[in-house]
Length: 65
Length: 193
Image (cartoon, rainbow over all chains, first blue to last red; front, side):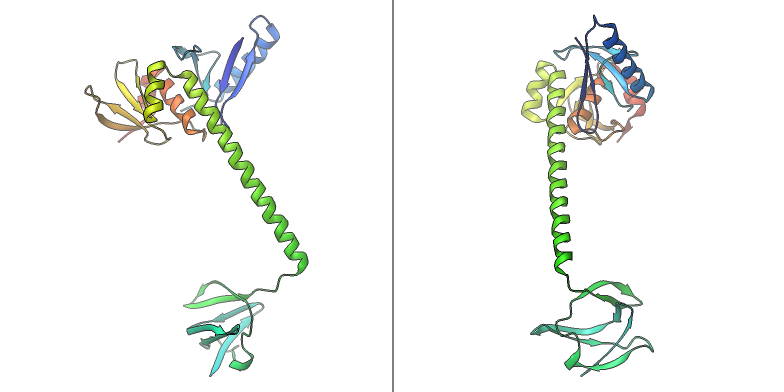
């Protein structure tokens, strides 16, 4: 399962998708693209907190700093 | 003793040199004559039990309005509105608490083991930027990041945070990710002090 934690004023909202399911992936991508277009920054991290990289497309997002 | 005052609608313009409300709800004020519309009254029929509210000042004189007595219907409406306000505030606080709990959990999920340990003890943690420089992130939103010298002492403070008013622990996570994964941009947008 993929998971996107979108930060907001009421805490983060999680959006999950099954990587095997093209429809769920497409919905996640739409959300991601919309947020990054708004200026959110995205970072890919592993569950144990290990950093991977800054994402230009998809995953953990931050509002533009 | 006599009093002078003038009224416009429900508003009474007056000033006084002394006040005494100790006589069974009779309010005795020395009132200064204010305009040609004023007239004189004896203290026997002035302000007996009359509730007045101070609303401001004009030309050095205090402005008061008479507060009409609350009807039963008005009282019921007021009580309902007060109850709604209390409930709204309660909900707001609950939401805020939930948001803070979520943010704390998200931060803990994204801290490395050694950072969690320090954070639990001190409420702050240290991150290493891509350049190798270390930063201490304290709880907060504004000027809560310290750029550290090699000996671990604070060199100066940095101010950069999400545009949205996210909970503090979300802000701390955002700052951590920026410093660890996009340090040059974090430094470019930050204010240093």
